[in-house]
Length: 301
Image 1 (spheres, rainbow, N blue to C red):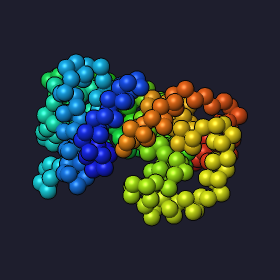
Image 2: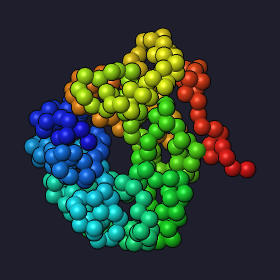
Image 3: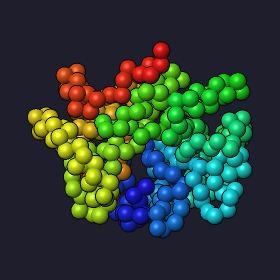
Image 4: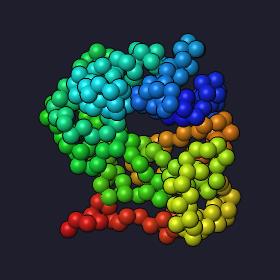
């Protein structure tokens, strides 16, 4: 989502080149990303990169999302069958590809029945335009509902859930991750650094790391973040790398979304897959950042 609004197209392409060199093969975006450049701008930048080299797309898992408003038109949003079909066609055009590997529902649409949503995606799959379907920002009950409805239709259903999850924000452990584990979904975490809070950097680019919200959170969690900083120093790893590695060590987590706005940021976390956190370190992190409870029974009896 940084590509375009914060990072120019040429540098965005350089970051993507570097990501491939590092062995990253999963690219996640959304049709609404674009910021001040307008919705769809980020998909367009990625599409130009994909088209620049023959065969590049074949080695990647490409994911995008549908739901957010794409214009002021009341029908140009949500998860109606009409919008899903039109939004997918538009994303394919911007990405300059013939199919999307993982097509994700960006949010719940309480106005669209599951049967309508699955009808639309069944059609896209039959047309060869998408391969798998995932969700994003869904609660556990919605994951269960959607997959039960899919089972009735004898369909695969959701294969992934992209959820807010990090050391600071662990509520996904209550229902979302247990539901994903029960239904066989891979969890993709977004904002694994809590908007920059867990990187312990002040930031120099005017982005989220310098926002009033992050500054307030840093002050409110001063003691907690100080203990985290000390633990990372003892490990000899950057706080951002430890925070990212922690997500990959959690049950059900298939991938964690990183959104570098520069090649330097990507280089700084290149070693994350190699970081091993033993049981003792995991326990110490749980003491600093307490889990929400014995999920999913934290409040059930």
